[in-house]
Every structure is written in C-alpha cells, then in structure tokens.
Image (tube, rainbow, N blue to C red; front, side):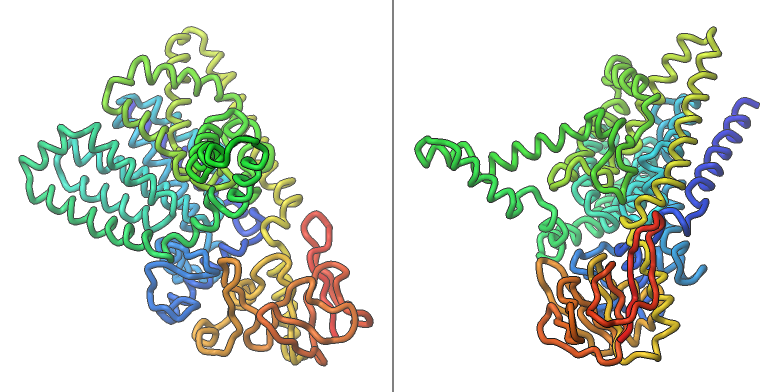
Length: 553
C-alpha cells in the first residue's frame, strides 16, 4: 500500500509539472524570441523540404544567424510541427516535455542512489516547481532538452553498470545525444564520463572482463557520438558560438593593456603579471565561484532576462537552510560512497562550461548543475524532518511556505514579468507580420527596422513563408561581426534604425547600396519615420509602450 501510494504521489507531481509548464504557453513568455522562430522555421523547412533555410540537407549543425545551432532540438521541433503545425506550441513542446522528463528521472536517479522514497519524491517536486527548471522549460531552449538527456543518461548508465545489461548502452547514447543538443554538454559530458569512470572503475572493469561484446558496443557508441563532436568543435563552425561569448574577447584584451598601463614596473614584469593566461585564469575562477553565490542562486539569478525573472532567485529562499544542511549531510554521511562522490563531482564540474564565457554566472549555460541543488535540499529536509518526526506541524509549515513561494513566483511570471518584459521576448513581430500580410499586395516594397533583431526570421515564421521559395529566391545576405544578416528577400527590405531617412524616400542598406520607396510600407521604431509619411498603425508592447509604428508612402 505504501509503495502504491508513493506511485500516486509521483504521478501527481508529474501531472502538476506538465500542467504548470503548458499552461498559457502561447502567452507566457509573451512571444517567441529570435532563437525560437529560428528553431521553428528551420524545423518547418526540414520537415517540408529536407533542407534548412540555407539549403543544406539535414545539416549536422544549423548555420541559422551564424550562431550555429546544434541539430537535436530543431529536429524534435520538426516532429512536433508534423503533429501540431507551425505555431508557438509546437516550437516549445519539446522543451516542455524535457522539463517533465527531468522531473521523472531526477526521482528515479535519487531513488537509485539513496534508496529512500521521501528524498526522491521531494527532489522531483523541487525540480518541478523551483524557478530554475520551471522557467527554462517554458521556452524553446536546447539546454533544457540536453539536461533531460543528461539526467536520464546518468540513470541508465548507472543501471547498466549495476545490472551489466544494455541500459549501459542507452545511457551512453543519451549522453551522446546531449552533446549534439547544447554546447555546455560538450564540455560537461566528457568531464562527467571521466568522473564516472574513475568512481566506478571496478564496475567498468568487470563488464570488460565478463561481457566484451557489451564493452565493445559501449565504446563504439561513444566513438560514434563523441569523435564527430570533437572534430566539429575543432573546426571554425564548431567554435563559432563560443568565440562570440568567450572570456578572452576584444574587451578583455583591452582590459589587459589597461592593467599594464597602471603599473610602473619593467615591461617584462608587467607582461608576466597581466597576460592572456593570467587574465583567463583569474576571470574563470571568479566566474566559477559566482555560480555558488547566494545572490545568484537565491536572490537575483542571472543577468539575462530571457532565462530568469530579474532580481528573483533560481531557487526558493525557504529551501536555503536545507541545501546547506544537505551539503553537510552529503559529505558527512555519503561523501565516501560512490553515489556521494558522483554528486560532488557533478556539482563541481557543472559550472565549468558557463565559467568559460562572459556574462557568468549564466542561468542557461549552467543548467547542467540541475538537479543537484534540489537533491541536496531534499537530503537536508529529509534529515531535519526525520529527526523532528514528533513535530509534524513543522513539515506543514514548510509545505505551506514552499507552496506560497511557488504561487507567488508563478503569479509574477504569468503577470508582471510577462507584461513588463514583453520587449525582451521581441513582442510585436507577430502583430506586425499579420498587418503586413493583410496589406501585402498594396505596396511595391515593405521596409522593416532591424532595431529589435532579425526581422526576416519573424516574417518567415509568422507568415509562414514557403521554405522552398525562400531557399530559391534571390536574397541579400552578408556576414559581419560574426553574424549573418539579411537585408532583402522578395519585396521585403530590412534596414538599421539609423538608416531610415528623416526626409525623402531613399533608404540605405547595410550591405551597400540604396533603394527608393515610392510605394512603400514602413514598419519602424517609435517616431522614426521620414517627414510627411502617413502613420496608419501602432503596435504596443504589453506594458503599453510603443513597439512599432507603421507608415505608408
């Protein structure tokens, strides 16, 4: 009866997890951002033509804007779109399901490690409702799918080591898929595999001795998934995304020179003290430690408002004492055991990828830390409530505080965050495209400002434009600042805000050249239109501020 009751509790947690991830998914976040519409249109293009927007057949990496997206999420969206069509729900569905899968396998993993149902159930609940995983599960984010693959991969790999069966192969296959899903996994997974091998070297050795075929298939799978990854990473394409976010960027080089100029030592000493190696080591260390700060975890979160609500922590503050106690219990009671070593290794390895980039601590790039904070919190809470079993009212108080924390957070997410930060999600493009589509045949040219980022992709997605038509028609593309920009396709022209003239009808393109707008529709930022053009429509952000003004000439 107790076991059956626990299964019902798990089912309830999973159903609740799904509900809070899918509820009002078309409206919160307020709109699809440029990465989400890129996923959506490239998936639609693959689904209908077998090629991406660059006419590449089933690419191993999607060029997109020049940020080179890994293939797993795009192909999952293609499956989703085949079932539900091209819409925000289809684009976000893989991430929603991945969030729920992470909840399930966090439960299974903790139950396998600690053999305690209450710790496993509480871990699953915390993964389901705490801001970190909940927020990222509601947007189309490759990182969220990678996390689900990693957590389930650890579970199956450990099961395979324990039972010496094909679960081991499933585990390494899931790890392999994760490195083709999100870039952080490309650093985390090799490090985690090294840790797992060292911790479970006896089990691996027994498998090699007793089942050479299983060991051979394991190695072949690892080679199939990981070797092409290393080859791709070593190429310019594989490093394109990292080069745009790395610590040692142009700003860092300038900072090194500034630090040297503030010294009055011999030049060789200055170079010894301040150089790329010392700067990188120092910045990496600072970035790494910030991932464990209360400010990041409990008070403020990261600085990118597309990955967390500003000035609200990634974990509920009510759980902070339990996490600290959980760390103490882990080292005191479980640190010498293999599963304890795994959790410690996981926690220490997880921030490495994020720490290599600027903007750390970064909510999304450090997602591979999950579900460790939830496991430690559950471990601490279980210890407290087992020691204070006579005071059951304390558990009721904790449950009430946890529910209030969740309810308050979710309300803010669905209301004030959605309204006040709709601009972060590039709200207004859908409304603009709807207006353009209705009036498309009235004008010879349609001009859209680039102020809010990548307008061509929003046109392609929300129209939706025929992918084969886009692949084959003339378009103006150019590469600048590690990015591919589109200036023109069909009758659409995309211009910088500062290239919109104050008078007349001659517009300049960033890629070079000008064009005249004699019969023209202009979608622009507030007040940025030539004199004597007629304003015919205004599109507002959800907070009432103007997003776009539409003019005709």
